[in-house]
Image 1 (cartoon, rainbow, N blue to C red):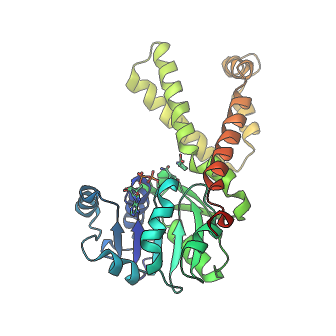
Image 2 (cartoon, rainbow, N blue to C red):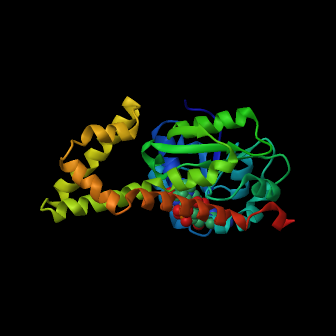
Image 3 (spheres, rainbow, N blue to C red):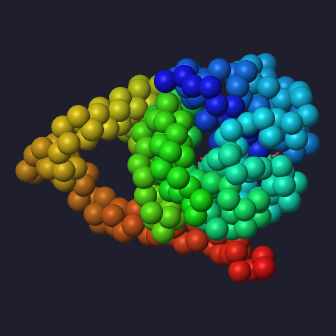
Length: 279
Ligand SMILES: NC(=O)C1=CN([C@@H]2O[C@H](COP(=O)(O)OP(=O)(O)OC[C@H]3O[C@@H](n4cnc5c(N)ncnc54)[C@H](O)[C@@H]3O)[C@@H](O)[C@H]2O)C=CC1
Ligand SMILES: O=C(O)[C@@H]1CCC=N1
């Protein structure tokens, strides 16, 4: 549903672009309702304006105060400076939506005027094509209506789930970073097909459609992935030979450790942003 709130993105990087393009493509909002502010790189704003029609020219302070929704889309290391620069212009009627990995709502709440609702989200880059998996949690001043509106924003670019803030680091490791693991798997599959004599284009086409088909099977049948796997795996057949090799190479353990390490990294990114440190 298209609605009338104005958005102001702080940070014009790849995640901001993924969300903006998804919101415009899904008609959640019009380009004229989106303003983007960025540090230094005016070329980037011109690119976003030319490509999507978003706004950037008027005073940045005015853009911030006119928006109902402020989206924080800077890197974790740049957040403190960004909040110093822009935080004082925020007001309690606005909702601040952070997409920043690792950083908890209390830190942001402490850097901006008292009472502003801060909502932490973790989308992923599939926002561009309206296929993000986004997790959302509210902060201390977040009302039901803020959560609902934020869910509607992100439902326009994929699916959403409400979680407790304590789960956000795990979410970040799993679905925030998740597309990269899948692309890494695809790189390996395509190369493996080529190693076995397929052309790169045939290998990529077969791999991509296999991934897509398997994703749809998971979603549309709702079956346990282990059951779906067993249906492919004939006793003594090719799949069994492949799966046994994956087991020998501790595939399961590699994935488990990767997600654990990514979650720890999310915690580390947030650790230096504890509210008590800023007092
Ligand atoms: N890339 C991804 O897959 C995902 C990223 N995220 C989060 O999104 C955030 C942004 O990530 P990317 O877009 O990849 O980073 P990026 O580096 O592409 O973009 C960050 C932008 O913020 C701008 N910026 C820095 N300081 C600023 C300031 N004081 N005022 C205004 N703009 C400022 C930079 O100029 C840059 O354009 C990160 O915190 C990341 O954790 C979340 C989900 C997925
Ligand atoms: O790698 C990162 O830190 C960000 C957060 C989730 C995906 N990309």
